[in-house]
Image (cartoon, rainbow, N blue to C red; front, side):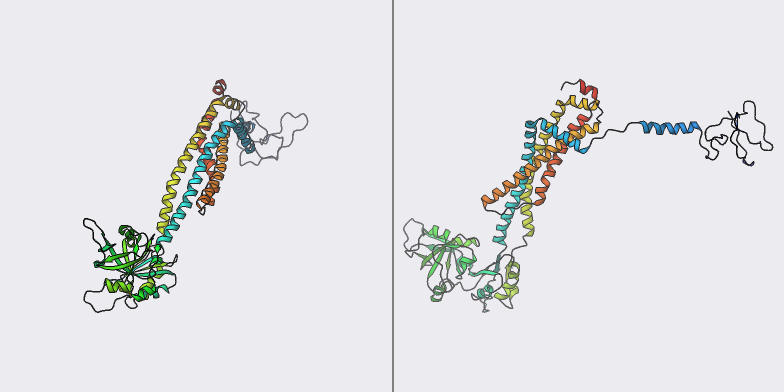
Length: 486
């Protein structure tokens, strides 16, 4: 049907409201030259809000009812559709708690797997950090405080004075950070000397031992961090009197069969007798001295020709080794310090990190294995729970629960089990680390991030372990779930 509209050139007259008994409102006069309407077009169709409708002349024109109905139906359909049912988080966690407590024994056993996994993780990392700290501490105490200065031997036939004399040790001991120092002298000729415990040679009996002979200052026991097993070490009086006395290393004493010096046993070097006054043992530095015969400097110079200092041993306090290594050559040989060779401990920060990283990595693998075992236990039990509660799942779906809500409930249950296991496991792990440290008399090293992160790790493990069972529960159709035996 064609609808005739008003010409834009003719001004529209304001329609008057119909009077009483009027069938149609007065129509506007046709524009000049307009064609009269054809048959059946005397009364064009109107709708509420049409300009030809006289119900409300001041209301702006509106779209036809068909267009309004299309959009209106869409809006009405969207408005009349009921909203998705939503579950409150408090209700979700209360339902999860009820599901966990419905089978307390099974939930406890499942939580025990997470407790063992998290507890093992905390124990292994805590004990590893504590043990690594002790290892690194001992490593530092032994090697980070030892400095050695090597003195080159003078050229044969040279009349130049030695670079370092025996009194240079006193200058080194006055340096800041030096704990003890001692000078040593040896040579190629005295490294293999035939030493006898007596001067009587029995036929067919081997009584001589090939040992090294060295000269050392009176502070040698402190410098090598050893102790006298029996007897005493020679002192300044023995050195000043040029006494023919020796001190044996513990291994040298065993080879010579000397274990007691109260009877003043003697040893023979190059046919000369020397009285043994002590046995030095438990050396923590220069272990080669345990198989050596040690003489006073004056006696060694007179009897063995050992006159030149070849090595100076220095012990420092922790952290002063590198500074002492720079200053010791200057104190020993001013003006010729470049000729001396200093062996200082390297920077142990990298070694410390390496040792601690290796120990932590080893125990971390063991802890992760235990944690994976706990996660598998949670997944297994959650999957069994889903299979046993098939009827409950179907009933919930039939009553309007969405797939997401069903999956959320089982995820919340597995997460709750993991969180509970993480809290208990972290607490037990910290207690075990402290107890082990107390028994070993160690200082426990506990990382606060580990203690606070263990429950989070437990919850994450429970969440991941319950992911597949929850998805399987969400995919169940209500009719099939209701038909299945439960």
